[in-house]
Image (cartoon, rainbow, N blue to C red; front, side, top):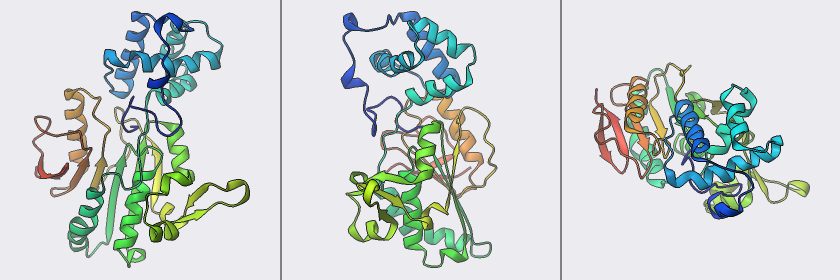
Length: 298
């Protein structure tokens, strides 16, 4: 699931600030059209759109109407609802936004390496197996941050079987993430030593870009995954990062998702969620360790 659905789009331009006044809109966008979009997005991706998102929905989908040469939102809704697979992918990609950053919510990574990793090294002293899932990985900055943290904290990582699964509903961001190429400004907040160690600066036509080193990319498997559909992985995972993903899901959908995630974690497994999210009155299978860090207890 793409993180922070329908917030300000970053990178790649936004929708909210460019919305046109209703009277100046290029296409008629009726209540019925908006309800159709809301219904399809809810049924397919579990995202519940508020009325306040109407302007953003118009702005983002109007681009699809232009690209397809359509003259009305009614025609577009018919196209998507009739099962055009390619356009349905564009529809989902347009309405999921990817607000992310390297080492966002830094305390999660400090806990991972300073507290949790020593525990996991003891638990897995025999099998030397470590599994982490980044659910809603966006353009890859979260899983690459996890990989950096692990490699920095585990000098013997090559003697371990370490894998990070990184998934998102948006096929475009998964493609970006798997390439591991970013604009230089996206890494300027990293410490100089971390930047030198884990990134290579582009030259010539690639000036202004950086590429993640293969030592990080080799730890991560990127996959497109809709959290509302079947999950092919069986686990168990030691840690799940699901941050800023469920804030637009209703409570029943959140309960279902966290119940499924609990089943992929062992007792004692950890779940990291976003700063504006909470499991309060959503599930009783985790205990709150503070600062949006949870541990499975049943």
